[in-house]
Image 1 (cartoon, one colour):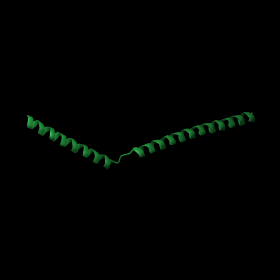
Image 2 (cartoon, rainbow, N blue to C red; image 1 turned 180 degrees about the horizontal axis):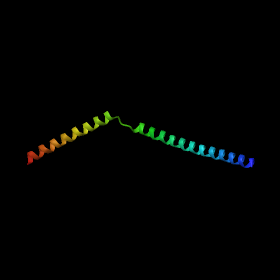
Image 3 (tube, rainbow, N blue to C red; image 1 turned 90 degrees about the vertical axis):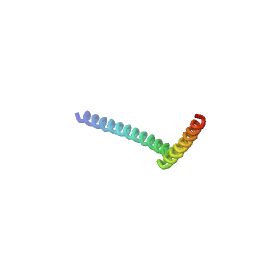
Image 4 (cartoon, rainbow, N blue to C red; image 1 turned 30 degrees about the horizontal axis):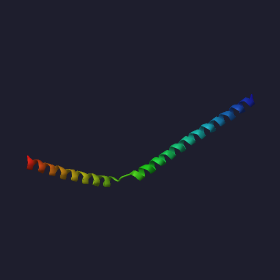
Length: 77
């Protein structure tokens, strides 16, 4: 009877160790993927202030084009 209990205990410990190892490997894999994602975001990140400046330049340019088009239509109108 004691042999069965010892065998069951050893089997349970081995199963626990295998499960822990598997979970640990998955956590490490997710950690590596997250690190890769963070690095990619950091290299491609545009600060909000730079984005706002670029968008303002684009908007100003579009307004100048609209003004020129309006003047052309009024002249030829």
